[in-house]
Length: 331
Image (cartoon, rainbow, N blue to C red; front, side):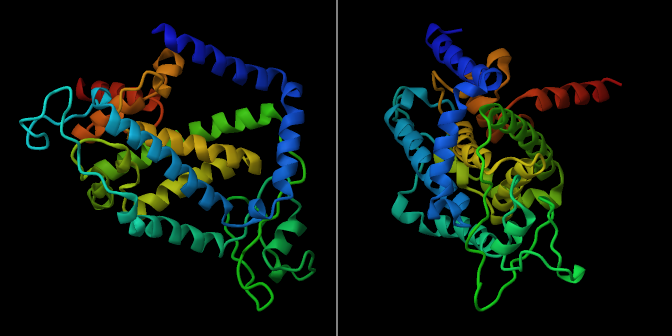
């Protein structure tokens, strides 16, 4: 392990462990921060998480793209045949075709439009929010005796907004009044990423192994050298499945809304990093101990070969699949 990795690994481990073991250290800060968000109209806006995702992606992908362009020696997926200029040196290979932000307006629109449509149609349901408040945010009366007018309080069953002249769209979301503890926040984040990683591994495997699904995944592999812009090179079907799986992973364990807010930038960062095509000194796969992280190198291998490394962030399910296929093949 490189000495430069030891310090950030210790710092990260210290923050995570103390947040779980000694939540009283962090809870006053979390409470103050959440109180600020709770009283923010923008945070209560139904499209907040969609806009947060777009802003995080624009910022993080830009940083990685600059890193990619300015550091050719860090690129780990340089193609050696027709995709690379024969006159280019190994230390300064030809850059893959990349699009300017001004030419990505359609990409932004196709990402944001279906998600905002869902935001303005479906009621937001979060743990710690009374059903009456959820109903009211969705244009329903807080309490009714008629069971035909009842709505499900389940976090997994969608409920359509009660459209009316006074409430034409689902514009606001009801939020819990209390902030989560740092212990709850960290544990919910860890569990939601574990669930997402598992579900996407299965979905990704299906996208590659089931022919009828493969055509929806093909646009993601139509590129030359791996680079940060490949992250969002997705069909609408795959993009929605990615977002809905992330949402399910948070809903199934009834995450606090602040956990969801923290989930988004970490999620976007991990997605961009595994598609960055960069061998970074502080890559998350190097920060995590015991080789738990998959990282950019393994994901670049997946994009090259398409026969392994289906798991997005970690590596245990891929290792399990290899062992299973080896066992079946040796029988």
